[in-house]
Amino acid sequence: MSEQMPAAEPGPADSAPADSAPAHSAPAGGVSADTVTATTPDGAPKTPGGGRRRFSAGLIIEAITQGSSTVITILAIFLALVVGGLLIVFSNPTVLNDWNHFFSDPGVALTQTWQAISFAYTQMFEGAILNPATVSAAFHGGSIAAIFYPLSETCAKGTPLILTGLSVALAFRAGLFNIGAAAQWIGGAVVAVWLGFGVSLPPVIHVIVCVIGAFVGGAVIGWFVGLLKAKTGAHEVIVTIMLNYVMYSLLSYLLSTPTALQEPGQSNQIAPFIDANANLPHVGGPPPQAGVGFLIAVGAAAGVAWLLSRSTVGFQFRTVGASPSAAKNAGISVERVWIWAMLIAGGLAGLAASTVVQGTNTQLTFNSYGTYGTDGITVALLGRARPFGVVLAGLLFGALQVGGSYVEAATLGQVPADIFQVLEGLIVLFVAAPPLVRMVFRLRSAKGGMEAVAKGWNG
Image 1 (cartoon, rainbow, N blue to C red):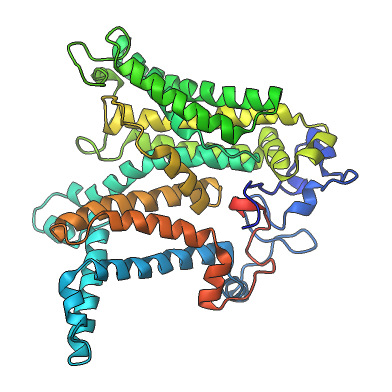
Image 2: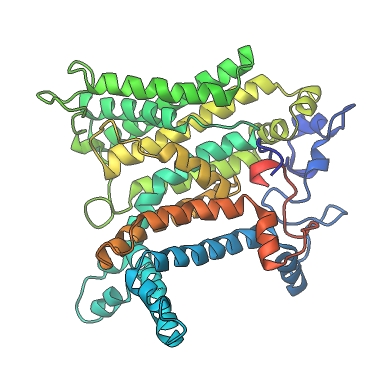
């Protein structure tokens, strides 16, 4: 990819608010909003005359042969699974030994290879999506809830990934690269945990106050980044990277100070448990089952989708992301857009912290932030910076994490869970390199069709 900074296409002229109409005129040296898109806001193709292309078998064939963004993503996942299968074989000494005798008995080597790969992927599916044994048991008096437990674990794992992915994706659409989701996550976690154990409120109100506090905590960190960029021109990449380290150190200090967030009588860096009234409810039992946190993530995705495609603010985000100079000439305050985009992005990362510290892990430690910040970047990339694409990408990564652990247990460690982390990286690698996927599968270069015309990582 020739460009690092993503810029999403503005919507069509007929969907723009009246007060934003001037943004469609092409200033001297600039690009009009209408010229940077070949799709409607929901990503559907448009004809040259401006109408939506008619859905047909020919359109599907065209999308496949030309390699639309959806087809490229599916083929990238398939290609990553193939490479992952090779890694599974190379990690299996028995299969490798059979390959040493390939020329004397090729059938055994091929059979053992297929069985090793199919068993690993079958166990991953059963651990992350659906285990047929639980369905059979349910018809013989077993638990019906057990059928949905693997999927609920996937949703629980994917929830914070969806929200940090939305945080990064929203900034992408405004032309910003938010690498500071980790710092924003910590900001939200600190506020949510403090409100969780330091304030006494009724059950439902306590949950709502903590969730709002988490959003505000992350939003303040994001707002500070946007403010610095708007007022001083400081690059958001540098600022967010530095703020990550600042927040790491701040969290370490707070969790090491008894008068701050450290649990009384503890020498470890750990905060008190939040009050039971502040816990997000779960479905059918204790964590890590999915619950209200997952609903918050899906609701946030719907809200971001509406914001970007149906609101004046979202139109301004997309216009600035496509061309800041054209947006400024059209009367849009680019600096204000940067501030608001980073504020909302930070709030979404703060919500990710809320779903963890109020849901799956009700005690904040120094390592609680994990890799949510960096994973958010890969989820946003895989989801092509589109809200519901981010939801699917977050669920896919959640399934790989849950399924990887299940496979490692089922194979007694013969297939390490790290292989599935490699799978995540391979998927993103292939999605980020469409020419490579087109070369492998001998696809023609896309010329419109179902592929959105956009720049950078969200194209």
